[in-house]
Image 1 (cartoon, rainbow, N blue to C red):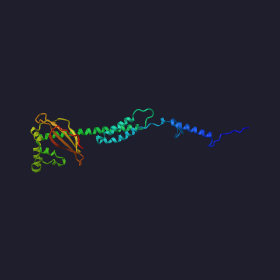
Image 2: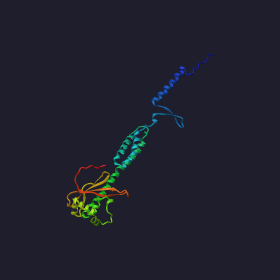
Image 3: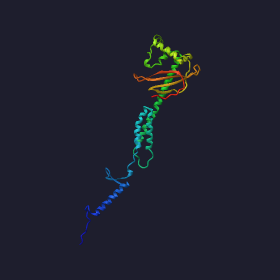
Image 4: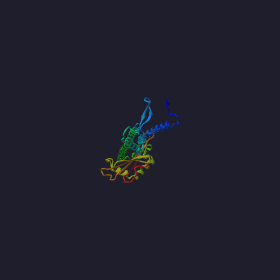
Length: 277
């Protein structure tokens, strides 16, 4: 009877070493090919993970979300509208067409697009509405001011040239106050001598149907909000255009604002900056 010979399982056995090396080579090749890797599931034990199970990540979606949040500053300053525009560009790029599983980051891109669109709409409509409101108010007060001068109410017209905090009280008789107060009387005389436009409007009379000659210009001048209105006399009594510039000053005591006439002059075509500071 012959004894069977079993291969040795010692580490130095060349057969065992060859088998181990072959298994390691197969696992390494499988890993490099990206085909199958073992993973552990909560209920089913070991499963197989492939490259298709991991969705691609689009960083542009996250950038879109961050820019969408920062776009809130466009509600305060229209210059910051660059932020929602950039957010929309990154969002559109993040939502470009894909194949296979939905890429990560597209949900953030959708949220960023919604935020950027809302803030951009607010950043555009709020300044436009404010400018339209200020222009409408300034045109109303400028027309009233010109009619006031035409009626010969010089004292009240001079009061409207001052800021609200520097005016006389409403119950005061302005004609009497200007007659008794030497300083106010001298100021009125100097204004009448220097302001030829006021004299010509007074001579034309109170029944002039003033019309706007051009769109009113709303602008900032060293932090002060002003509106320039230009008027013409359709009757021809006053041949030149009349420029009435008003300034809006906020009142910190009641949170409101007050208008006063900053300048009355004949209109001259000049080159100017749209805004200063």
